[in-house]
Amino acid sequence: MITKEITIEELVTVLPESVSYLMEKGIRALICGEPIWGTLEEIVLAKGYSPEDLDKIVDELNQLKNKSTKEP
Image (tube, rainbow, N blue to C red; front, side, top):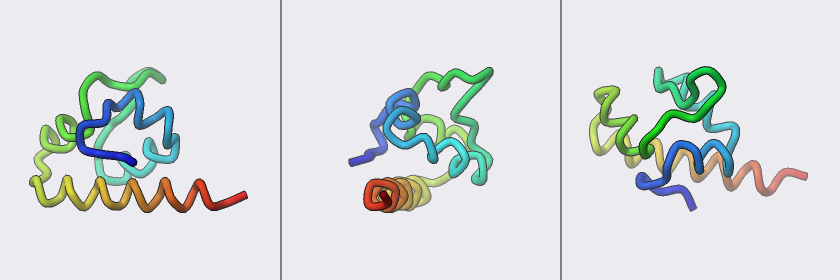
């Protein structure tokens, strides 16, 4: 399960699709091909998103993860 405390490095490892998802929201998860430091919460809030937005992003990432694990 993805939580707001997950590090970006772990998030990118368990859900590579998260990179493009976050980019669509204007959040960079990679710099020069390497995950940035910090947690999902830190980078989302640093981009000006609210705590409520963070909760929605976590929910959407979990939905994306569940969808990707169900596909063959």
